[in-house]
Amino acid sequence: MLSKRHPQLNKHGELIHLLSIEGLPQAVLTHILDTASTFVSVSDRDVKKVPLLRGKSVFNLFFENSTRTRTTFEIAAKRLSADVLNLDIARSSTAKGETLLDTVANLSAMHADMFVVRHSESGAPYLIAQHCAPHVHVVNAGDGRHSHPTQGLLDMYTIRHYKRDFTQLSVAIVGDIVHSRVARSDIHALSILGVPDIRAVGPKTLVPGDLREMGVRVCHDLEEGIKDADVVITLRLQNERMSGALLPSSGEYFQHYGLTEERLALAKPDCIVMHPGPINRGVEIDSRVADGAHSVILPQVSFGIAVRMAVMAILAGNEA
Image (cartoon, rainbow, N blue to C red; front, side):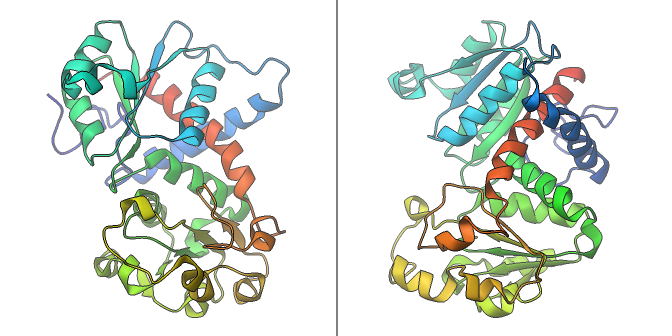
């Protein structure tokens, strides 16, 4: 049974699962970012492979759709020379009534070494980590509204790449924060890495008030929220997670909270604009900003492969 206090770390403080950024030591996050930097150049090679996971089997268990995340995990695992299996969950045994843990037990019997898990229920990756064999590592690829740690890490890698020093930054996260596991992971990571000014920007219905207890500055006015920011992270409206009418319309949302060139001019001149994707142009961000000089949205995707390679390589090298 895993330690309740540190379900992600072994007795030596090494990462054995990546379930959440919350509670991880700064040294662990920095180690992942440093390791990722060594993998970025792999994409430029003629043979885009290193042998670190040769002979290992990585199972992608996506109980929730996500082409971008699943694809980057698959690319990352294959570049580490792992054998990758993508399960069609919609037609799998769980759709036929088998429990999540029975499914995991059967897959473990197929000599899985790592599970990459996306699930609509918060906590599902934790449950799997508690019940899988000691040699099996679990990576949370997004669970409910709770956490998306590798997205948070690739966001941190992107910020560090362009801004170098976290301890002097003002970072504004704009949009549907209440439903966003990315926002939660980013806020925890930014706090751990020493960012002094973290802002959550959006309408009252989409920004949880308890963020103030985490030292986050809550702003309901976009101009105030992005003024003099070094980094602006925009989030899409997650209509599939909303119950009831939290917004009058997407058009009205864009009128008040859409990131336009005119509004971005209030941020610092060298501000970078980020987005975890998929982008809804004309809703949370204008096309001229998404494709403009401040945008680092496409580099985020490229860095994501290196970050996920780093996570899997580190996990595979650590014993429970």
